[in-house]
Each structure stands twice: as structure tokens, then as C-alpha cells.
Length: 489
Ligand SMILES: Cc1cc2nc3c(=O)[nH]c(=O)nc-3n(C[C@H](O)[C@H](O)[C@H](O)COP(=O)(O)OP(=O)(O)OC[C@H]3O[C@@H](n4cnc5c(N)ncnc54)[C@H](O)[C@@H]3O)c2cc1C
Image 1 (cartoon, rainbow, N blue to C red):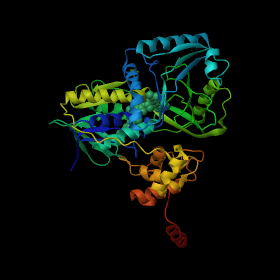
Image 2: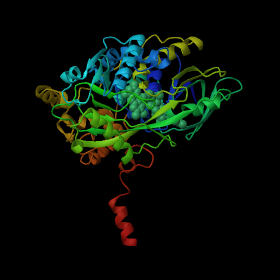
Image 3: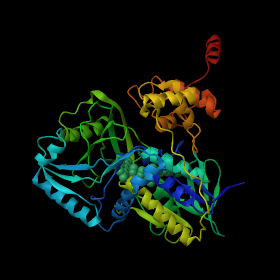
Image 4: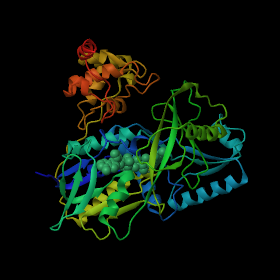
């Protein structure tokens, strides 16, 4: 028998999960399918994590509308979900008269978009705020309302809240095609069997144009896959910059930044290069070199000695340059979010609130009377006072076992990750929920221990535990099997 949900959401990124959470307020069954083995496996895990204030988007565009509305929602949303967020502010720096004109344009755009408290500064004024800036910086735009967030932790919290309120998540499920059914509703073909639904909601990131074009042949959309590569530096004793430092944006994106992260690391990037394969998240020497060339302009003293990892994410750039959000033209019951590139993270809460309300009205959805209240994740052990740590260990001795030494993550926290409403099922899923494996040794020490705990807690045989799903197995067999193989050879 086919799977069925009143609403089927394809894509468990920050947009799909925010929409799932909003739609869980109504008396309908909602299912989310994603080809990844965790939520936030697309752009939502690999981006700059900036909650943009909204000075860059063209006034009147959907990007401008949702960015400014979304950014205003972050403080209370992150507080209610226990997600790390900081309104650290930003500086956009310039090096020439031409850059100053760009900054004036951004200031004007920001004012028209409703961004408060921005100010143009001289190079000296900028360096008074951020002494590590290049002496060659001649001008800057100060944007106090810019913020930073952990993008994947936000996505997990949105998904958990949705799951607590009845949304089902089907990970490791790739959708190949969707079509309207003659009697209404839709049929989505997946590699785990067909799904039927009354309402189809396309939040498929880099694949979003594929499903749009299957449903709406008259006005096709085109997504360009634009990869951005990063360096992530270990937590410094003294952060080089208190704010996010941008350079002037270009047609390819918001430019290369140097930014603190909410966890105290330093992020450098991203590059911008158009690629053919929407799944190719490789990092390349040329991409990383292009990042460093730009970073040195902002921060001449940068050193890569503390670099702990590199990664890349892929932007879904729609040809029109704007977000495409709303009903699929000519296809009643189908809705979409296409081309959600930056500032998509900043915009996600507002996109979800607005689109869910439009769907509810058009599809006559009745609100639910009650919601299951969200329980914030436990405070990380490393952030507790010594007294709190003692108390935590007294209540649960598993807090007394440090599994990840670099980030000081305990067994109790890994166990909790395996039992969240959308549970961690892979090593990477544990890593992003707890930070085990996020530190200097990048999981070299703790991965086998995490695998053993995950296997014990989930019932997945140890041999089947993967790094991030698919064929990414950690173990190739047992010692007994290997001995037998060698004996026979
Ligand atoms: C390099 C980079 C830097 C960025 N920096 C910022 C920033 O600082 N601030 C900001 O506001 N925005 C930023 N963004 C944009 C932001 O990350 C995205 O707009 C946002 O994450 C999009 O969320 P989404 O849910 O639409 O897409 P995604 O997170 O990509 O989710 C789409 C999901 O669909 C799934 N999927 C795709 N195809 C299929 C299929 N066939 N079957 C099943 N599932 C499928 C994928 O696995 C994925 O999980 C950046 C993006 C990138 C790439």
C-alpha cells in the first residue's frame, strides 16, 4: 500500500522543517521526506550562519521582504528553541572610492528595506571597533542588527518541535518524480516506494526546480548550483573580530567573510563557483586559495595553523535572482519554495510563517486546539559551572564519562542526541547535535566510542553504523570474519 500524508514536504532543510513546524499547528497529517540521512543535509548545514540584517537584497524583492521579517523573528525563536544565536553586528569593509559607492548603495537599500541603526564609517572608525582590520580599509558600513546562528541546530530544533507535534520524518528517502492525480492530490515516486498526498510542498533546495518543472511545464525554472567553500579555525583564546566582517558583495554572492561562530570558532569563506553536479560538496585547492586571497585583504595577520576543517555548501540560485515562493502556477494543491539561496537561512522563519498561513487559508485547514510544548535541549556539560556539573553527574553518572575530549562532550549528551524527537542515527548526526567530533581532532579519538553508544541506544548493529548514511560505513567486518578470510586465502 502507498504511504499517505495530507501534506507531503520534500526537503528537510531549514525551510522544509520551519514549514513542517508551522503546518503542525493544523489538523492534518504532515510527512517530510529527504534523501539525506539526517535533517539539514543540504545547504542548511553548510553555510555562513549569518542572520543577515537585510541591507543587501533589492528593495521590493521577496528576498528583501522575507530577510527583514525573518531576521526580526530570530531572537525570540532561538530563545524559545534553545538555539545558539548572537546579534554580534557586522561591518562591510571597502578599500576604494568605488567600494564606498557600493557601501552607500547598501546603506540606501538597507534604509529602504527597513534595516535600523546602520552607519557609514571611515577606515579609522572601523579599526577603532575592530583593530585587526587591514590598514588598507578606507570605509565601512556598520550594521549592528546582523547576527550569527548555528544553522543546523536551528533546523534540528524546528524538526524536533514539528515531530513532537505529529509530523513524521522519512530520511534516506529520495524523491524522483511527482505528478498530479486525476482525482486530485499527488503521487510522489521515491526509492522507498510511492507516496500519495493531498497537498505537495516542494522545499527541495538544489532539486526544487526539478519538481517545479515536473508540475508546471509552461513556465520552467532553472537553478544554477553555486558552491561556496570554507575554512573553519579552532576556537582562539581571543577572537580576532567581534563582528562579522564582509567585503563588498558581487553578482555571485555576499562576498568572502571573516566571522566568529556561535561556538567561538572563526569561519572564513565562502568562495563562489558554478558547478554541474548539485551533490558535489568537494573542497578544491583553487576554491580555498580564492577564499584566502580575499580573507587576507580583511585580516592580513590570518594564519591557517589553527585550521581544523574545510567544507562546502551549494547555493540554489534561480535565474530570476529572487526567491520563488507560493502556489505552483496551474497546479492546485502544490506549493513551492525555489531558489532559496542566501539570505534563505535568515528568511526561513518568515517564509514558513507566511507560506503556511497561505496554504492553510487556501486549503481550509483547521487549527489544532493544543500543541505539545517544546523542551529545550539540555545545557551542554562544558557550559555548566563546576557545581552544575557535579549535580548533573550525581543525577546521571553518564555525565561523568567524557567521550569527545576536544569539545568536552559526555556520554549523557550523546545518549540524549540518539533519543531526540528526530533522533541522531549517524556519526555526523551526533556530531552536529552535540559537537562530539567537531574539535581539533575531528573525531579521530571519539568516533569509535560514539559509534558504540549510538549502536547501543538505537539498536542499529555496530557494523551498520555510518558516518552520514548510504555506504559511509566505519567498519568493514568483524575480526573473526577477517581471520577466517585470511585462513582461507
Ligand atoms: C555557501 C553558502 C553560504 C550561505 N550563507 C548564508 C548566510 O550566511 N545566511 C543566510 O541567510 N543564508 C545563507 N545561505 C543560504 C541558506 O543556507 C539557504 O538559503 C538555506 O539553507 C536553504 O534551505 P532549504 O531548506 O531551502 O534548502 P536545503 O537546506 O538545501 O534543503 C533541501 C533539502 O532537500 C533535500 N532534497 C533535495 N533533493 C531531494 C530529492 N530528490 N528527494 C528528497 N530530498 C531531496 C536535500 O537533501 C536537502 O536536505 C548560504 C548558502 C550557502 C550554500
